[in-house]
Figure 1 (cartoon, helix red, strand yellow):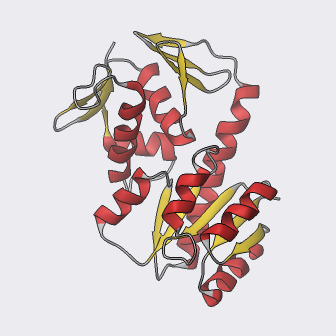
Figure 2 (tube, one colour; figure 1 turned 45 degrees about the vertical axis):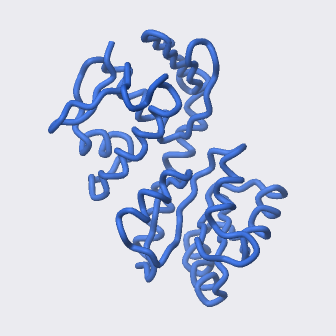
Figure 3 (tube, helix red, strand yellow; figure 1 turned 120 degrees about the vertical axis):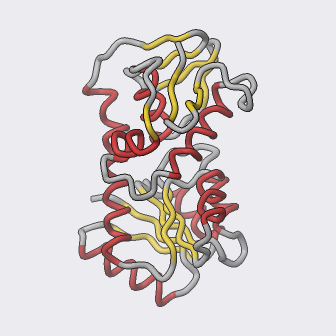
Length: 229
C-alpha cells in the first residue's frame, strides 16, 4: 500500500481528497500546513505528496524546496492559480505535476496513478536492468544505479529528469519533438507537453557549464531537442 501525504489547509478539500484516495486503496496522511507536512514526511515513508501552495506557518513552495533537498518523491501541486507561468514556476521549484483547483477527482486520481507508476518504475528498475553505462563527453549515465556523473561528480536528478536524459543520451544526435519526449517519458498522450521544456531547463542547469549556451542538450528550433555527441 502506498502512503500519500496530503498537505491542504482547507479541511473540506483535505477530507474529500482522502475519500478519493482511500477508494483507490491508498493510505492517506493529512497535514494542514507546511511545517506539519515536513514533520510527517520525516517520520513516515511517503511515496507521493499532494501539496497545496497557500498554507499557514510554511507555504507549499517552502515545503517542496525542503523536501527536494533530500528526496525525489513525486510531488503534485494543488493550486487555484491556473496561469501557465504559475505552472512553470511550480515545476521549476521541484514539483512533478500541477493540478488546478477546482479539480476533477478522476483527473487527480489519474495524475496520482501516473506519477506513482513512473516513480516505482524508476526506483525498482535498477535491480531489474543491467544495461551498460552511457558516456558522452563529460556526462556519464549509469543505468544500474540511476546515477548521473558530470566530469566524475554525481549530480542530484529527479526520476523524470533521468528518464528524459536517458532517452536523449541513448539516441545521441537524434532530434526528438517535445510531444514525443512527453509521450515516451510520461507514457501518456502529450496533453501537457510544455512541461518538457521546464524539465529540459532544469537538466541543463545540472549538467551544462553554461546552461544558456549548452554543449550537450541542444534545441533544434521548430523541431525539438537532441543530445549532441
